[in-house]
Length: 216
Image (cartoon, rainbow, N blue to C red; front, top):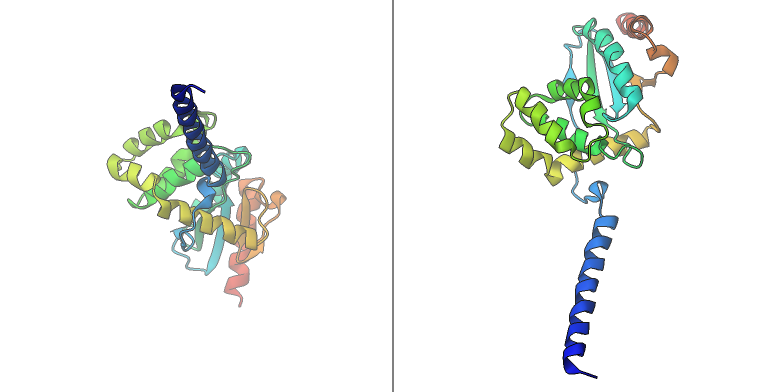
């Protein structure tokens, strides 16, 4: 056999082998595959004068989350002095390919003190990035509009620590039985979907929790 052919064949085999390893690593080590340990995120709003805690496990690409967001915001804002509102990441990666990237954007903004500003902007502008093949481009524009340091935003967006925090939130949700988004817990009790279908119903549940807390 021609020696030149053997050399070329060897190069091709090595090249294909490297390509296979690279592809396999990407397939088995997605965004959720980080091994870095982290605590859950701690994004809270409200003065919590009545000792009432509302927690939501949300997915920024979830259409139901986007639809309930204005209901949630009105209900929370009207009780902002009485309760504490906490957001936890629960990206449904298998059906929402841009959800984790959106959570990364929110976490990166949070590292500059503007988590909820980005949280609100992601929902309000969901149509701009939900089906985008380059969602980061949109997120960078949102970051600019919020006055964030763009270089820091990009670095934090891509960091393993940000991804680990998202994973910690997700795992906490799984341990509590969260299997869809949005899922709300009011003083540890899971709310039914009918309880969050309108501002009036959502506010009524919060009022019930405030009354129960006050009467303890």
